[in-house]
Amino acid sequence: MPEVLPAATVRAQARLSRFVAAFLGIGMVLLAMTFGTLPARAVTEPVPEQVGEYFATGLVPRLIDLYGPDAGSITDTKVGQISRVHEWTAPFLAGTSTKIPTQLTNSWVAPVLLKDQPLGLAIVWINPATDLPELADFTAGSRIVSALAALSADEVLVRDKAHAAWFAVKNSVLTPLVTGTSGVRTPTQALDYQGSLSRSEASAPATAMNQGLLVAGGTLGVAVVLLAVFVLLPDRRRSTPEPLAAPAQAAGAPDDANLL
Figure 1 (cartoon, helix red, strand yellow):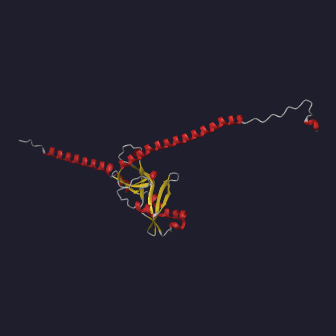
Figure 2 (cartoon, one colour; figure 1 turned 90 degrees about the horizontal axis):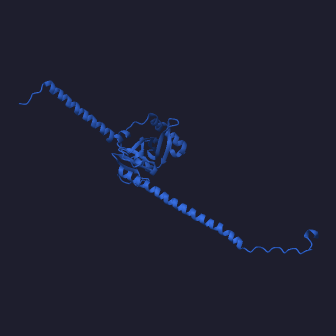
Figure 3 (cartoon, one colour; figure 1 turned 180 degrees about the vertical axis):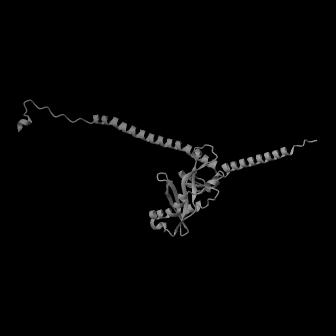
């Protein structure tokens, strides 16, 4: 006959089971937040108040100061959705295995619209010297604005400045928004892109070495030619007939000075 546990023991075991289940659930949530939804949290991170205020009230007057009538007017020029800019981490660029290939930067971007038509993309940063936001860069044209408009709310916006490229990154998959010189034209795994970066870095020293050898070879050739000219030139001077010596003055001949 099975042993019957006291009611208090049964209740204690039930509470323990619920505690363990809750603990495991919290652990799974924390893991998901850490490794699965970090990009989404970075995208939805609130824009600092001073940065948002600059985009709202300071950016358009600054563009008008820089570009004049081409930037429109206070009433006609508007600023669109603000996005935080990310970049590749140093370990990712170095080819090191990393779970998080991107990191936050001190920059935010937003499209600028003139009468609801794309005018360009503005990049704003917080100047460390003044601790105030200011315009860092402005790229005129509708193409980049249209490209970055494809960024969704759960993707990280990554600027690959070295390759003039922009990517949308989610769950280790990067989608090219602006290809630049990255060579990426379709959605690609971050590891594959990291491998291409490592290969290009590895080939760069070899190319530089080959160019150095060419320069060194050319310099050596010039030096040899100059040395040959330097060595042979005295021989040519010695082979030139020496001028005839003036005839010796005969004994008793009048000196030129005595003729005066």
